[in-house]
Structure formats: structure tokens, C-alpha cells
Image (cartoon, rainbow, N blue to C red):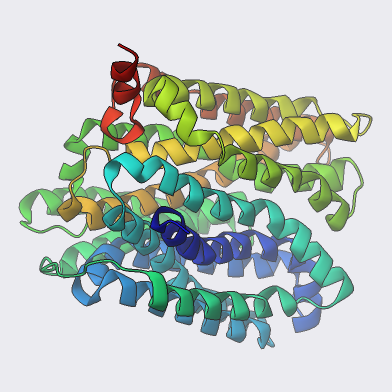
Amino acid sequence: MSPIRVTPLILAVALFMEQMDSTVIATSLPAIATDIGTEPISLKLALTSYFVALAIFIPISGWMADRFGAKNIFRLAIFVFMLGSLACSFSYSLETFVISRFFQGIGSSMMTPVGRLLLVRSTPRNELVNAMAWLTVPALLGPVTGPLIGGFLTTYLSWHWIFWVNIPIGIAGIILAGIFLKVPDGRIPRPIDFVGFILASIAFAGTVFGLSVVSLPALPLIYGYLTLAVGVTAGILYLLHARRTEFPLLDPALLRHKLFRSSITAGSLFRIGVGAVPFLLPLMLQLGFGLNPFQSGAITFVSAIGAIASKFIAERVYRRFGFPRALGWASLLGGLLIAAQSLFTPDTWVPVMMGVLLLGGVLRSVFFTGSNALGYADISDDEASQATAIVAVAQQLSVAFGVAVAGGLLELSTRLHGNALSLVDFQLAFVVVGVLSAFASIVYFRLPADAGSNVSGHGALAASKE
């Protein structure tokens, strides 16, 4: 198999494991809570602790990769994630489960950005779209297969299996990475920015924790608002610090690159809706339609088929139409399809719902393949480690914000009509997050038609026709 396929598929082993695990646990929360003697709402602290670990350690992932070797850190991250999975499976109380999830999040915080860094450094820019497609598709399978797999394992085996399945996957990833990944690691690392690390950790952890508490209130809301305030304050202090530091941990100067900045901005907007859907749709299908978790997962799973199908068209789409037009239409139509889920009712024909989700999966996968590739079109190899960390932080914040927006809309809607959560509350939330995602198209449509052509090959195609 071509290295352009082998490398991203090996990296996707870890990304699939991380993405699936972050969603599969939500399906199994009631069973886990019963087994360890706590309430499901309290156990949502485990979700929060996982995302807080991501927020703290993602910023330092780029420096770690440069200092100790990206391949070494990637394999170590998988190993730490596996240990965290084992710890989760043997947890016997709320406290041990929350700590285990935090430890698991430390491993996850290195897997995604370092995996993407390995791909960027090992792939020529003109082949990056194809490589990103192979990387993106397996990673996108995680969020949509998570509820289905989690529901099946919890229903027919036990919740412990949702963590045990990570072990053989992780072992395969470590072995394959050791054999097949050929990435040069001869870079001199920048000096570590300890002050920046502390400020960035407080900023991102405070923001993610605050958004998590606001959207999934396992604690009093005042804690969410206070930690949000602390996070925003620390973020401002970090930006001031970065201006005065020669080697900041995450260099805001990278945003001077127009294509990188556009990818971050538009990608974050689009992820608001994408992050909200795994939270909204299963709840609507279960609470609004009366389906059980397995039935709900069987419907949402179809978007995985769309993600797989996109692999075979993504490179051709970007080569034919270029990044601005293809990404603009993918984000516009993708956002509208998210909003279209507001039209689902218990009487809606299941194949119609699955058709909307299938097409949405295609557009979502095409979008992320192109958006991720475009972001590195004007980034040098020396800047790649910083860029991957910034991208990973932006992704986590935008997904957390999407869940917070969705949860906030449900809370606001129920307060306005004074009744329990109903179908109309979900429909309103779908419309709002879908429109927010569609706004990403504005950023791309404003780019020059040949933006990123060195990566998409769009200009080369046009020239070959002359």
C-alpha cells in the first residue's frame, strides 16, 4: 500500500480510538453510575475531567514532539491512553472514575495533535488532501459509531467493555507505528515557555470546564460562570505574555498566515454545529421519540457511511473546484442539513432521517478533509508543531462551545415555556447551531479562487486544460 495511505491509516487508529471513546461513554453513563453507586448527572464530571486534561496538555504537545520526537510521543500517548482505559474499567467510585478519565485525557491530548503533525511532516503538500482524507474518515467514524457500540456493549455485555476494546486497538497502533512510520525527527526544540504553559493551561481548562458545567450542569452553574471568567482572564494574560516572549508556547503570530487563520476561524464555526449534534440528536431520539440507546445509535450510525463515501470524492472535488468554492458550499449545505434535523418528528420516515444524516456525513467529512489541508498550505515545516497544537486547541474549544450552546438553548427554551423538555426545544436548538455552522461559508467564499492551489492541485488542473 502507498505510504500516502499507510501513514494516515496508522495514525487514524489512535484518532478513531480517541474520538469513539469521547462519545461512547455518554451512552453508558447510567449503567456506570448504577454500578459504582452514584448518579448519572454526577458522573458527567468524568466527561468534564477528560476535556480539562485535553485543554491542559494539548498546548504543550508541539514542544513535546519537537523535544522527544513526534513518533516517540505518539506511541507513548497511545500507551498512556490504554492505561487510562484500564483504570476506568476498574474504577469503583465516582472519585476513581473521574481521576482515571483525567489520566486517559492526558494520553488523548497528545494523540490527536501529534498524529496530525506526523502526517504533515511526512506528506508532500500536493498530496496532503488525499492523506487527510484517509486520516479524517476513520477519525470521523468514532463519534457516530460510539453510541451504537456503547449501547450494544453496555446492553449485552457490560460497560467495562467500552474501555477494554481500546487495548487491542492501542497495541496494534503502537506496533504499526513502530514498524511503518518513517518521519524525520531531527529538529531543535524551542525553549519551553513555562509561564505560557501555566497561563494557557488555566485559560483553556477554565474555558472548557466552564462550558462543560454550563451545558451539562453536574455542579452549580455559578462554578461554570466563575471558571469561564478565570479562563477568559488567563487567556487575555497569555496573549499579553506571548507578545513579550521570544518563544511563546502557542505563537499567535501564526495567525498572520491568511489560510491558516481562515481554516481556524471557519473550522471553529462549523464545529459548533458538529459538536452539538452528537449531544442533541441522541437526546431527541430517546427523549422526544422514545427510542432506546441502541435504536438511536442504529439511526445515527448511517452518517459513518457518508464519511467513508467522502474519501472517494474529496480529492477530486478540491482539485476540480478549489478550496474556497468547495469548502464554502460544503459548510453552507452542511449547516443547512444540521438545521434540517429540526424537521424530524416521531412520524418522520426513518429512511428520510437516515438520508439526511448520510448526506450530512459526506459533507462533514469533505469539509474537514479540505479545511485541515488548507490550514497547512501556508505553514512551513518548522511551524507545523505549533500549528497542530493551535488547531487541536481550537477544535476542543469549538466543540465544547457547540455543546454549551446546545445545552444552553435547551435550558432557555424550557424556562420560557415553563414545561419539561419537549421536541420543540430540540428543534429550536438544531436551527440555531445549524445556522451558526453555515456562517463558516462566508469565510471561504471571501478567499481568492486559487487559495491553497499548491495543496489542492486546482491550478494545475486548470493549466492542464489550456
